Length: 504
Image 1 (cartoon, rainbow, N blue to C red):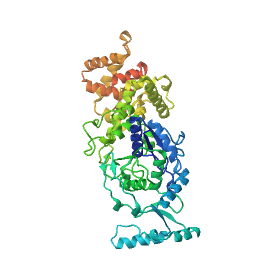
Image 2 (cartoon, rainbow, N blue to C red):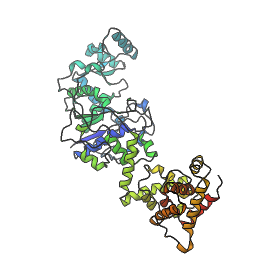
Image 3 (cartoon, one colour):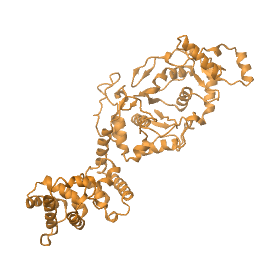
Image 4 (cartoon, rainbow, N blue to C red):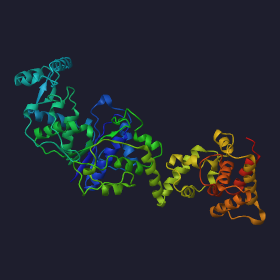
């Protein structure tokens, strides 16, 4: 069975790069008819951050990326925390020792530091002089019995021959052993594994068939393939995902910028839009592996998760890092909201969120209990790009206009007093004539604006802003006929009369 895994470290909030990796694991597993695991790589206790695991699970749940096995779900590959798999790593380290592919190193931290300095002065690229490789079995046994602390290192000189590294995204990869540490440490003196041993052991034991991970691990691929060869087990297929970068080209990380998924949740972005945004970053234009059979979507194409699963191809990912454009997220979020409003269940969820946010903003408004938020959301017709902006857009319904603000004063200064008063007085007359009481719907109110234009002798581009000022005191908002319709007859007339009496 095709089996993938997403294996974050609990060192802080899940960030966008991690969510993108989880997304691609989810997409690829579903595309191939397989499953995926959430595995927590928590052997580095010094970097552990309380709440990280809960944040990771909450972020995946918000995004709709449901893993098949892992924390809270169980499954045949448990345990799913590396800290609970320590005995397994020690067993594999002993296998490597017994086969001659690893050896014990008793060097102290001070000696290792001195050795690195000495090798650098000699111009060597080595990081260790391999002093402990030449200890006899008797000497090793004696020092172990004496209780000396030791670590287990890989013996670079004993690695079996294996194929050259190959990656689904990057193609043939240079076997750059020179950039790796000399005889890398596999098991530390505290009996905890390094990442390299743990990840190879876990992926093999869990039966992982495809490893999708960040490009930062590409230099480690030769080492991991060496370990598979030393253990005489087949490696999975590898695909390294190009990095997400900051606007200045630097690698996006947890420590720079506001890239935590929790922040995007709090700011009201739609999970479907965020996934769409992340998936499109770097999708297309791979000169190494893409073919005519792997077309790429437009870089602003609106795609749901099922559509992403259907269209996605790893071989279409570019090998270049990608900068996330915030404007693209704004565009995609609006389009996803519009699409979801066509579904009654999704509309109800959006309306419930809109009501909750509006109640939080205007808790004492009399209009809250009489507002049909589902209808109000529909009437917005895509005017809001983010659910968190909804209360600002409908503020005129729940609080009286403030004509004293700088924005309101600037709006009114564009008109003479004669123009302003003429439009307001004529509107009051048209809307309250007892002999010709107009039907209170948007179409009729829209037609009333043309009657207003003719009566006042002013163009619509002057009449409408004057009414907007009187009704909302805000420069931007819904069209005037919609605003009046939503306010209702009595509130509209009351605000027009208040504006006429205002001397701000």
